[in-house]
Amino acid sequence: MDFNKLAVEIYGQNKAVGWWDNPDRCLYECLQLVSTEVSEATEGERKDLFDDHIPARKMGEVELADALIRALDLGGRCNWAYEARVQPRQVYDDWGVARRHLHINEAVVDLARNLTAPWANRCYSALVDRIVWVAESLGYDIKGALVEKLAYNKTRADHKRENRAKKGGKKF
Image 1 (cartoon, helix red, strand yellow):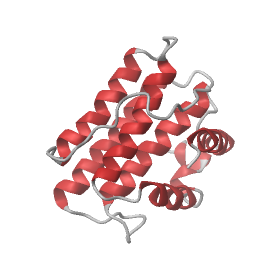
Image 2: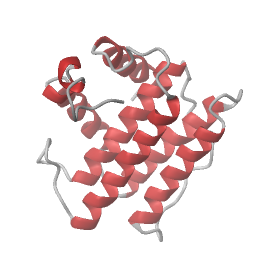
Image 3: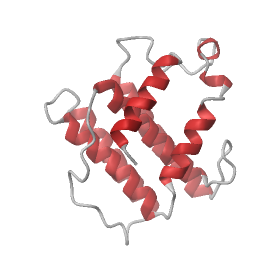
Image 4: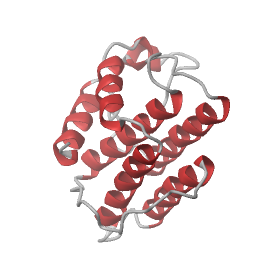
């Protein structure tokens, strides 16, 4: 999977439907939303749930795909180029799910701390790697889930500009 091409596509799609209408959109909010998706994955694992939107897949798998979508969207927005394996691949054999998810959030925080640094690109690459590695360590088809979730997102009423603008709508 070409993460650089995908980042450009996701960002372009999200920009076209208005997620980036505000040129001053806070990038820290975007990173927090990556972390939110990871938290939702934890909840799915904790309760052993299947996803509401893609019911053939586990919630944890789809939420990690959502985290990857959000990370790639930010990468597209910031013109970061994904560099494969900027860090040694983590082996998660003796790690529980919560610790694996926290490892992703550690990369979110690292990117937040270095958002404007010349090496932000490497922090972004590390975040993408960790999401993929954790998903794969749990036996998930992260790439398949990502493709399905992107297709589903194109049909969502709550992703339309007019619905996001309503009271209680998605504001970020």
